[in-house]
Image (cartoon, rainbow, N blue to C red; front, side, top):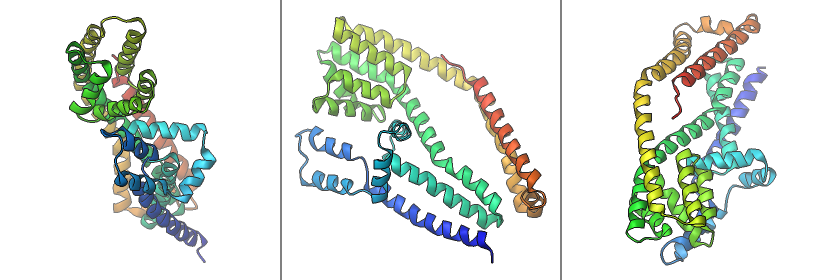
Length: 326
C-alpha cells in the first residue's frame, strides 16, 4: 500500500477543487468598496439598477474568504498583503491571495509528483510554487510603478498648464484623470472620487502616496500640501519639479541601457543551473534521482538546497551591483 501516493492524490483533488473555487471567487468578488464608490462618484452620482446589481453580486463573496477575512482582520499580515495588492492593482482580497498561494503550492506539488514519482521532489517543487503568486505581484508592482513614474512628467505639465489657465487644483487633477492613460489616470480618478465623497484633499493624496510608493510622487504631493497651507505659486513650483523629474528619468534610462548587459548576465547565469538540471532530468532521469533516493538523499537534498542558496545569492549581489540610485 503506497500511502504517500494516496495522500498526494487526495491533496491534489482538494487542491483542484480549491483552485476552481478560487477562480470563481476572483471573477465574482472584486472590491466592494470600489463598487460602492462607483455608484456615487460617476457624473450624475447614481448609476442605477445595474450598479446596484453589481454591488450585490460583489457582496456575495466566498464563505471561505469571508471566514479568513474575519480571522485575519487587523493583522499585519493581511494589511501588508492588502497594500501589496493595491499597489499592483490586483482585485483580490488578502484572504483570496492566501488561498491562491496554497492552491499554487498544492498544484505544483501534484505536478512535481506526476513528473518524478518522488515525494521529496514534489514537496520541493510545491515550495517553489508557493512563491509564484508573490513573484507575480512583485513584478506587477514594479512594472506599474515604472509606468507611473514615466508619466509623472506629463502629469505635471498638464497640471501646470491647467493652473496657469485658471483651473483649481482639483480641476487640474480631474483633467489628468481624463486625459492621460493608465495607471496614472486610474490613480487620480480614485483621488477625485474620494474628494467627491467628502474626503479632504490632503487625505486623498495621502492615500495615493500609500498606493504608489514613489519618491517623485511624494515630492509632488508635499509641494501641493505646503502650497495649500502657506500659499505661493503652485504652477512655478510644479514646473521646477517637473524639470527635475524629467532629468532623473532621462538619466535612469541611460543607466538602464549601460547596465543592461550586467542584468542580462545575472539572469542567464542564474537560470543556467536550473535549465541544466531540467534537461538532465528529461535525458537521464536516474542520474538526477540520485539526489532523492532513500540511500543518497541525506546528502543530495542538502546539496540542492546549498546550490539554490548560492544561485539566489549571486543573483541578488549582481542586481545590487548594477542598481544605481539617482
